[in-house]
Length: 103
Image 1 (cartoon, one colour):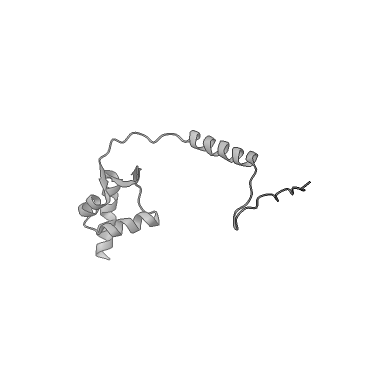
Image 2 (cartoon, rainbow, N blue to C red):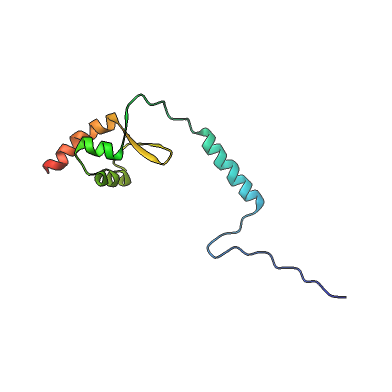
């Protein structure tokens, strides 16, 4: 009669921690609770401009606006994967753009 050996428990890949089913379920429930607690954004009443249109209106390079987005200097709306600036944000930036050009 052959003796069967038990397989050792499966180890996590390097850099990953092992989780139990209960841990994964708890994390999923917490994530869903956070998502459901968020209130939807207020409906837009302002006109939206994409990066290139906003840059043209401001007389700046689109790359300048993208750098400002990455640095967190701009308030923007994201619809799907596209980024839009509101008319009020462009009005606010028009003063910043004039000061940046003058400096």
